[in-house]
Amino acid sequence: MSTLTSPFTEESPGPPAVTRGEPSPQAGKESPLLREARKRRTFAIISHPDAGKTTLTEKLLLYAGCVNEAGMVRGRKTQRAVTSDWMAMERERGISVTSTVLGFAYQGYEINLLDTPGHQDFSEDTYRTLTAADSAVMVLDAVKGVEPQTIKLFKICAARKIPILTFVNKMDRPGGDPLNSLSEIEEVLGIDAVPLNWPIGGGAEFQGIYDRSTRKAMRFSPETHGRLKVPFEAADLDEADSILPPELSQRLKDEVDLLDGAGAPFDRARFLRGEQTPVFFGSALTNFGVEPFLNAFLDLAPSPGARPSDRGMIPPEHPGFAGVVFKIQANLDPKHRDRIAFVRVCAGKFRREMEVTLARTGEKIRIMRSHRLFARDRETTDEAYPGDVIGVVNPRQFRLGDTLCEGEAFQFEGQWDFPPECFARIRCADTARRKQFDKGLNQLIEEGVVHVLTGDGVNPREPVLAAVGELQFDVVRFRLESEYDTRTTVERLPHTLARWVDLEGVDLSRVVLPSSSRLMRDQLGAALVLFTSEWEMAYFREKNPSLELLDVRSHNAGRPTGKRE
Ligand code: G4P
Image 1 (cartoon, protein in one colour):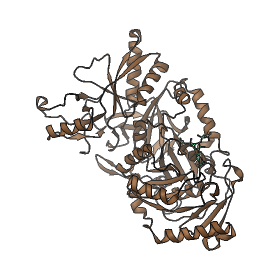
Image 2 (cartoon, rainbow, N blue to C red; image 1 turned 90 degrees about the horizontal axis):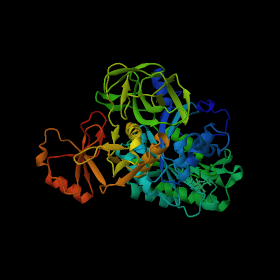
Image 3 (tube, rainbow, N blue to C red; image 1 turned 30 degrees about the vertical axis):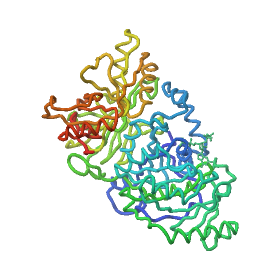
Image 4 (cartoon, rainbow, N blue to C red; image 1 turned 135 degrees about the vertical axis):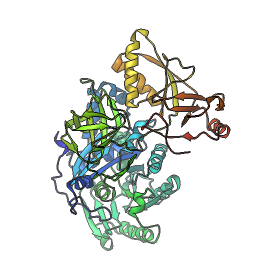
């Protein structure tokens, strides 16, 4: 499909150049592999529902030349829902449950946007997707500020030190206050917020943005109503009167004076360590500020870097190919009923039909069917570089978190499960569908949609499911019914927290378990304690001081490893 590689042909009078980040991808005399890696920007957008993630995504595609007119992505959403039956659930509820990957080229860069579910009750899928990103864009609603889901996703990024750029959207709505937005980011999220541009006016008066590095003001014309690229005029701050009404121009100069005299300067090293977020203002709906943001993003966001493994740090220029399975999805297209493993290339070059080692088992596998993805469309890919995401079709042996590599096998670290917060018993309502029930459930477990837990007192015919978000149980029921023709009932359990625990060599008779807590094993055999409250968890800690409670479980083995709480 041509949209995958569509070149940016239409020359727009681009915004002022920014030179605060990495050298342009054409610069330098690196190896071809490193040059390709440096061209890549692989990121995810985090936001609360309705903050404007879909609108911004669409406008980034518009500026990258992938769509000629805004409105097409939403159109595609509807089309997709029609061609993929379980996506009907998304359509029915107006939510996005699964993640997709959008890959596109722009000004010599290869951009991979990892899309994440947009529902409040989002799932581990989002968390895992963030592990495949090199940076994140946080979209805030200028009027509503930092909302609950943003906080949750921000915390995941912060824990992984993923650099975050902030786009304060909807500046065209009345009630936004840029200074408030900055202080809210700092107070609620605990990160330094450094504005790299500043809005000119706000609400109905929002006319443009001022770029602090070039000291230029840009005034946009609203006539394309956001459907097409927005035309603009630019002027130095001293000459802002030439493009702005005198009172707006004066207000801008006063605000810039205030800004220049206050706050920490932007420090890219701190941004890359996740300590500082550069902030941009704009309106995705009207396209005001979208193009300068895209250009600044390319300049500031990191290209793929070295990733930790059990053999030390593996840089992208590592000679052999290495990648991680971060998502598995079956039945994307009901006509084919196939299964795709999404692999993030972390090092080396991927080639079609290459043989790789599955690090977990040592098995050699030839990858015959590999695709690049654009939303749910696919095209066969012959090669891929660090930062790219490829879809491998029907990889029966692959599990979430698996490392695939060429040459000596090693396992990337950092692909974890997150502790579930919702638990439920599932029953197959129709005993004649038992086989389909088991098959479907196994499929969903392999995809990581839910975990299945075993333990004393659990009837194997009524397994206990565990998930990060409650919506996952609806997804399980819906998919079992629509893909495996099996109706089920789900009964919630009272537990709200779980932690992995290393029980190797531990005398189980000495473990003190609060009365409502349960000790169980997940599908990889790792022990997990389920609690009904924080209090109960604290009690467990107090009574079992030698046992470590872990909030991550590595995929490297059945045994839990991870950080101490
Ligand atoms: P999401 O993916 O984060 O959930 O948000 P989405 O882009 O779907 O945007 C949510 C709503 O906010 C949409 O309105 C969208 O048009 C609007 N919106 C997005 N960006 C801006 C902006 O910069 N300014 C203003 N004023 N509105 C913005 P809707 O009425 O829910 O949907 P629609 O009828 O426009 O499709």
